[in-house]
Image: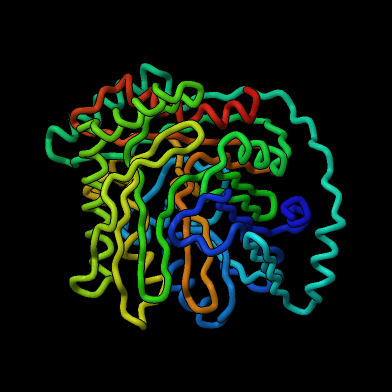
Length: 409
């Protein structure tokens, strides 16, 4: 189905990889071919989205890039961006396919659902195109990274912020890859519940995210920030269990998680009915193929007339990818990181005709521009006053390891 979708200029494939998490109603969702689109950069993009949704009472799929912060918080971005996704893009698909465990629903505009199904069933997946040899480079040397973390700790000591999510980019110039097969390999190596293959003409997101940004179901909002990571040892059950306990009892990781939970509670309270914001789960430990993650669940209830654009203005960018307080740390992120984040630490998802929605956090992802053959992936960690720079550096390398393995570099 995904290989079939890749023939279209625009497609969005969302896969939960059979994780049975709250709020997942479908195994996979696929949207292809655009009947209507909105593409905008920060300025008045979210108001434009509101108008677009008013005109198009249908399924909408698309993304929010991190740099929408410039519109929400009156910030700026001067760092370079070589992937070049727009800050906001949504489309009404001509074809929507919803897969359950034993069902397939096809919604199609001006076509026949049986024809679409037969086209998928008979589609032949092309063999992988051998990608050219390329070298992955770092925006930060190890020494530069360590010095930057020390600088950020000084900001924390001065009271400029409490916690900051600092990321570094790994990139390749002149990379020729087969995005479909890279995504398939990434999904096998690191299956995660918010995976996404997203194609916008010649720009690609190949995403193996474990994290939900925000879900709306009826009047209920649900956010599940991740803060806290430790490696797994699948080959040794005893060692693996010990690592899980080490994460659960780690005071630094617990403090990071609680800080972000407080930030998310504050964000949801801007848009939720008074007294409805609550923490449904605090610091749950969840296992993924390479790591254990500490995940909390925060919810709130909104009024009937609240529209998606208002929700995004109150909650985006997600606290787990910024830190606290949000505006101050976004200023520091812009100052100390060396490229724009763009779609990384942004979000991809859908808005249903009923105006329910579900959006991920774009992490553990390859971004690729086939026009200029620029490939990028980023990794980060939460810096606090107690952070050990060397440990933070190793955490970034751990998060990047699965992608490097898939790229065979």
